[in-house]
Length: 396
Image (tube, rainbow, N blue to C red; front, side, top):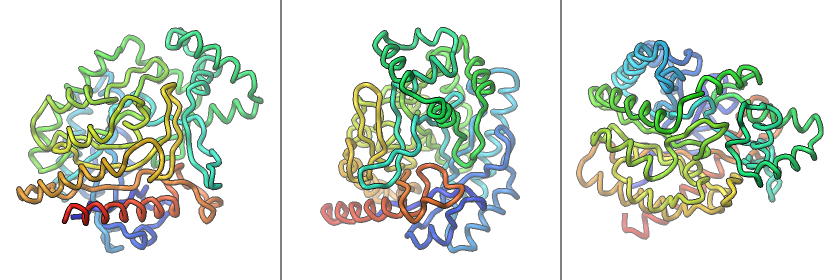
C-alpha cells in the first residue's frame, strides 16, 4: 500500500499552482490559513472556503501544516490560557470539517534556520545549507546577543571570528537577511531589532522550562484532538539543537519519548521529518522510524549531508547521510500493520520535503526556498519509485 502522496501549497499566492501539483502526481494538499494571525481561531467558514478551492482542482486538503503555536504559549506568559483555548477551537473546527492531521512545532522564535539559501549544488541546481561558523558569527558580531560567547567553545568563537573577517559588507548583510528570513508561507522577515527583542523575551526560560511548557500544552490539546478524530503530529526542531541560547526540546529519541508519554492516544503523534531529525549527527532515523512507527502521523522525507560540527547541506533525496530506503521500509511495514487492524490512520500522508531550485524555476518570483515545482517533482518521482520497489519486495 503506497503512502498518501501530498504536496505543500502556500495558498492562492503560491507561484506553484494546484494544477501543477496534481500533474506531479499528488493526491492530498498540505496547507494552512497563513492570513489568519497567529493565536486567532481558524473558523469553519474559512477552512471550508480553502477546502473548496482545493476540491475544485480534484484534490483534497489532507494535512494542516501548520497551526502555529503562539510564542506566549511557549513562554506561558500573558494571555497564554486564552491562546490555548483558541488553539483547541481550531483543532475542533479542522476536525469537524474533515481535516484529520495537524502538524505543529514548538520552536522558539525561529521556525527553521539556514545560513545560505542559494548554495550552488554540484549539478548546478540551488539548495540550502547551515554552517555553524556562519551562524555563530551572526550571533556574536551581527546580532551581538548579550553573553552570546557563553553558548560557544573557544574554537567555535575563533572560527567564527576568522570567517566573519573574510566577509564583505554585502555578504554580512546577506547573512543577516538569510537568518531573519520569514516563516514558511510568508516572505516577511524580522528586523534585527525585532529579532533581538523576540530572543530576549526568552531570558530565564531554560530547557527544563520549555519542556514543561510543551508537555503541559500537549496534555491540554490532545483531548480536543481525540474529540474530533484528529491526529496531531509535532514537527522536530530544525536544526535539532539550541540556537541563540534558545532551548529546543524536540531534538531526539528522548525528547520524542517524553512527548508521547504524556498521552497514549494515537492523536498524540509526531511528524517524522528525516531532514530535521537527520541534521542531528547522533540521530538514527531508521531506528527512530521503527521505534515510533505506531505514533508517526505525518512523514516528511528529505536528505542531508552532515558532520559532527553541526554543518549540513540539503541533498538530493536518494543521496546524503540519511538511509531513506530503511526509513521508508519501516514505515510501509507499519502501514500494512495498521491496515490489517482496520485503523483509521492506516495510510500515512507523506510529502517530499523540499527540493532543489532547478533551471525552469530559477527566475520565478515568490518561490519559498525548498518549495519549487521541478525540484519537488523530481523528489516525489524518486520517492514514489523507491516506494514501489520496497512494496514489491515485501509482497505488498
